[in-house]
Each structure stands twice: as C-alpha cells, then as structure tokens.
Image 1 (cartoon, one colour):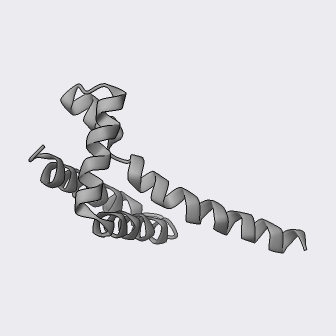
Image 2 (cartoon, one colour):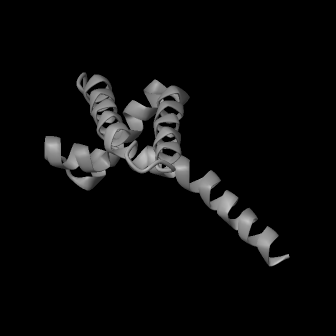
Length: 99
C-alpha cells in the first residue's frame, strides 16, 4: 500500500509541479535581463504566457522530457542540455522581445 501511495504522491507532484515550473521559468531572466522588479516580471510573464497559450507550456515540457530521457545515458546530457538551454533562450527572445 505504501508503494502505491508513494507513486501516487510522485505523480501528483509532477502534475502540479511541471506546469508551475514552466510558468516560472522566465522570471529570473526578466529580472536580470530587463532589470524589472519581481511584480513587474510576474505581470509581464503572465501577459506573454497568456497570449502564447498552451503551446509554450507543451514545448517546455517536451524539452524537459527529452532531458529526463537523456539522463538515462551517461554522455548524452552533455549534448542535450546545452541544446535545450539554447532553445529556451531562443523562445525567451522570440516571445519577450516585442514587449
């Protein structure tokens, strides 16, 4: 029974945590890159993510899944992680450049 409860707790943590992680991903970049206060960064982040919709969440979660799968191999994360970070920065520049 404890094994089932543990797996259920892990699944519920992922279900709630992954969208929250995707939502908060660009806040540090907005604060450092643009020099915004935390409140203004939250506001701009919320505005952009609402205009983009679910597509950005799906893409970020897909990149996370690729990294988790690559972690099963020893050398592959050294290739996949920089490509993922580059992709996230390109998405940041693309979506937040017009604001």
